[in-house]
Image (cartoon, rainbow, N blue to C red; front, top):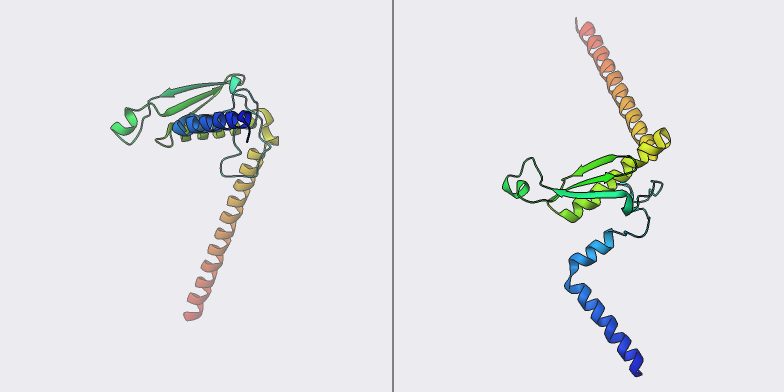
Length: 164
């Protein structure tokens, strides 16, 4: 090992150690990519969906406000509620699902990405199609339950008329 490779390896180790001492910095770099316009996260609940529109960090305006709702002093005193605004479309998302600011930031971006996709693509959006399919499935299930109830009533009436 020569002197220059030893020097570079010590610099690399120093960077790794500095990063490990500040895990919050690593988490920020992991979730946010301000210079790159890459999809931040896939659709919530779906790991393989990547057809959503791309959000760039320059188009987003982020605020941290105090939360509200149940939880008392723990939620009302801390500013872990994230308000995220997509400037070109004007869509605003408020996320206060967890006590963690990082998770709220991540979830707010997921929700905003879905809403922006729905805003621009309309009926061609995958989210709209999934929602429509879910509604159809629910209606079919309701219809089958109603038919089964009618069959049971009919059988009960037949049994009562035979018993008389």
